Amino acid sequence: MSVALGGHGPYDSAMNCKTAQAMLWLVALAVGLPVFAISAALAQTPAPAGQALAFDRSKGNCLTCHVITGGDAPGNVGPALNNMKQRFPDRKQLAAIIFDETKRNPLTVMPPFGRNLILTRQEIESIIDFLYTR
Amino acid sequence: MLRAMSLMAIFVFALIRPVTAADAVNPQADFKAFRDYFTKKFPNVPLNDFVNGPYSMDAGLRKQWLEIDQFPPYDFAIDRGKQMFAKPFKNGKTYGDCFPNKGIGIRQNYPYFDEKSGQVITLELALNQCREANGEAPYSYVKDEMASLTAYMAFTSRGKPFDIKIPNDPRALAAYEKGEEYFYTRRGQLNFSCASCHVQSAGEHIRTEMLAPALGILAAMPIYRSEWNGMGTISRRFVTCNSQVRGVPLPPQDELYRDVEYYLSYMSNGLPIAGPGTRP
Amino acid sequence: MRLRLLFSMTGLIWLVAATAATAASTNADFKAALNAAEAAENDAGALKNQWTTTEETLTAAKKAAAAGDFDTAVDDARQAEALAKASIAQAREQEIAWRAAVIH
Image (tube, rainbow over all chains, first blue to last red):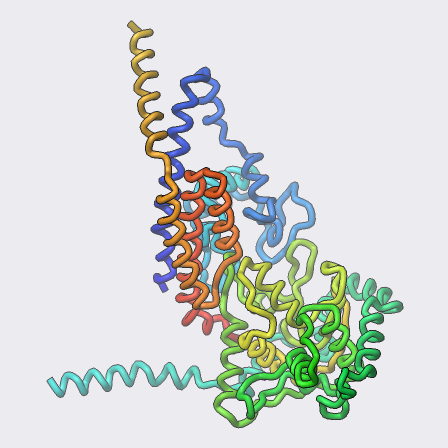
C-alpha cells in the first residue's frame, strides 16, 4: 500500500522551491526595512493564523467534523479537539495524523491533508500551534 | 527448470485462488450484510423509515419535516410531471407508451439490467431514451423537467417496495460489482468514498448537516433540497457528492453512475418508494 | 568598519536578489511545466479520478501566464502536476484498498 506515498516527491520539491523563493524575497525586502521588525514578525508564530486555517472551509475545515472551543456549528464525525497538548505531547505525532491518518488507520475517514496537498507542511504546523491553545 | 516453473505456477495459483474465492460476487450475501449493518447501527429506526434519511433519526429534524410536508415544496414538480405525462409528443405518442403499465407505479423496478443492450437502465436514462425514440430532444439529467417527470413517476409508486433484479447474466453481475467498487472507492482530494460518509459516518454530522444512511437513500428521489433551492435528481446527487469531495464528477448517467445506482438500489430491496422527498 | 561590513553585505544581498530576478521563469518554462501537468491530469482522467483542485490550479496557471506572470504560472503548473500525481496514486491504491471498506 506504500504506492500511495509516491505523491510525496513532487510535494516536497515544490515546497522547497517555493520556500526558497519566498526567502529570497524576504532577504531582498530586508534591505529596505528595519531588521528588527522582520525578525519580530517571524518570531511570532500566530495561533490566529492557525485558527483561520482550521476553521476555513477551503483549508483545514476541521470544524466540519470536530468540536473545537470557539468554533460555531461543529460536526461530530471525529473526536472533539480539546486538551491537545496533554493528549498529543509529541508534536510530530499530531502532525503525522493531520498529514495522513490513513497510514495509522487505513479506514479512517479523515482526509490526508498533507499527502493530498490540501495543506502545506507550514499550514499544518500553524494549525498545530492553534490546536495547542485548545 | 521445468520443475521450478511448475512449482512457481503452483505457488502463483495458491496465491490467486483464495483471493478469487473471497472476492466472488455474492449480491445476496452483500444485501444481508448491508441491511444488518444499518439495522444494528440504528436499532431504534424501523426498517421502512430508513427511506426518510435524516428524518428517521433526529426528532427535531423530523418535526420540521412533518411541518414542511403540510405544503410540500415538491408538489409543483409532481403537478408538472403529471401534465408532461399527459401531453403527447409531436408524433402523438406519450411517455406512457414507452413504459410498462403506462409508466404508473413502476419506479420501484428501476434501475434494471437490460440484457439486450447489456447495460443498466435507470429511470432517468429510460425517460430520455423515450424522448429521443419519439423525436424529442433529451432533457438535462440533473433538475427541472427530468426532476418533474421522475417526481410524478415516484409519486405514483409510493409505498411499493424496491424490486431490483440481477438476472443470471455475467454482465449484470459485472455491472453490480462495478457499482459496488465505485461506492467504496475513495476519490477526490478529500479522499472520501460514498461509504465514508453514508456507511461509516451515517447519522453523524458534518457541521450542522446529518449524513444520511446509504440504506434506502435513493427511495425518496427526486428531492427538493433547501441547499439547492430546488429539485434534484439522482444524477444531481451523485454529481454534487463528487464535487463536494473535490472530485471532478462524471457526466450524468455515465455507465459508472448507473452501476452505482444499480448496486445501491439492490441494497435497498424491500424498502418502500418514498419519492419525491425533501431534504435540508 | 561596521558600516563598511553592512554595506558590503547589502551589496551581496542585492547580488543574490538580482540573480534570482534574472533566473525568473519564461514562457518556455511555463509551457514545459504545463505540458507535464496536463499529461499527468490526462492520466488521472483515464482513471476517472481527476480532482477539481487540479483543474482549478491549471486554470490559475494559464491565467497567470496570460498575464505575463510566469513565476506564478510555473509554480501553479507544478502544483497542478503534484495534485494530478497524488490523484493517480490515490486511484492506484484504491484499486485494491476499496475492498477493505466493504461491509461484511
